[in-house]
Length: 513
Ligand code: BES
Ligand code: ZN
Ligand code: ZN
View 1: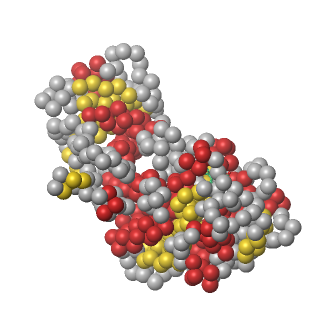
View 2: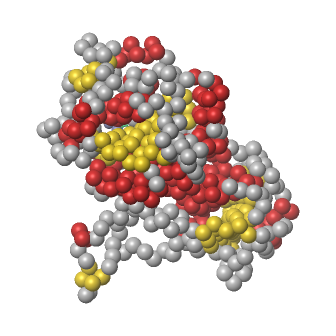
View 3: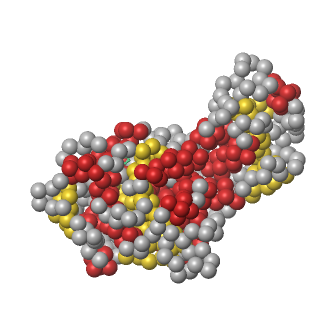
């Protein structure tokens, strides 16, 4: 906070920073480690003392092994005796540890190093299993996540120095650019999701999109209430009706690779952007409402993934479609038993106003489908049922192409953002039969609601377009998940980049058809 003439400047006049500061630590490849505040070393739990011989002050590191045999995923720390008293952090992995475990260990190592508030960190991987490059990438991702400051509104902010430098060995070869862009994407999704709902309101979100589109060279089209009315998007508009302002809307952001400026999208990323989910007239209770400013995380994941694709200059034409509104209470708010006709002509009988996510996504999926993408992926914190089924460690995945399932699961394993499938059989539709409309919004009883929500959304995706739906039960988890040590995880960005960039799902689709 800037002080003026001994008085603090009035808080209201300080422009609210809706985007994180762009500066992050420098990533350096070096043959030598140099003088560092912190050195993070990951090694197989089964390896002996001799594997530590190459480290500075090897005896000290080896001393960490003198007690009992190290447990996999455990961390030990000591201080070296050099002038800077480098903080030494040793982490142990089982042979063949999964990417999730590699990230989890990396997160623990960064957490135990955090108190030192290092300005420089060195990363080392000893042994060969899992591959050193994978473990270094996990450590790099964890370092960039740990040293990314989420929004804070404390008056006495500042004090802890920022991390300035991450030093990695020159061998093995490592795609630090991919790792950095991926971490930036996850961090952006986390940042936006953490913003308080009075700051990231619909107007604020629109400003954020304008600024991000400018920075990353993306197209941006905003469909406000009157445009959406023209397109018949009455399912989205039912949720937005209670807002009491006309700021809600559906945003379309566009990334096109060089020389394909005018091409149709390869992929459409669709996100639930409920800025605050009160439940509507079916009001949530205190505990279940408290974290509902995070109900826009699906939109943040779609947006951050699109930006990452643009930063990677991926050869993929991609759009993001974000359904941005609150689910408010108020005299205009939609009610149970309303019947609304969605943009694709489907009439919906409203049952429960807290099932707003599928209403907002229904029209957003229809609008995205009109552009004929070759693949549609949607993200949303859609159902409590998915959390009950999986806990917050996994997100649920559903697809209209069973042949894609193995690839989706593989991307989850390889990225460490794990997804798990649920049934998607057509006979579940019987539970959504309405007496007066084409479909019920949800069942009166909430059995299998995550499955029914996916079947509901299926009505808004043309069967000829391959589609996967992610119910983001892992968007938030108390204490964090994997390498992320905060409750808000940004889950979905790593997963999707793995799927689209590293596993090249679009290429596989081309071969199938
Ligand atoms: N945003 C919630 C679902 C949610 C809650 C996701 C907590 C993650 C954590 C969604 O809009 C909702 O309220 N769903 C209802 C649907 C029900 C009324 C059919 C639910 O899950 O209770
Ligand atoms: Zn809800
Ligand atoms: Zn919701």
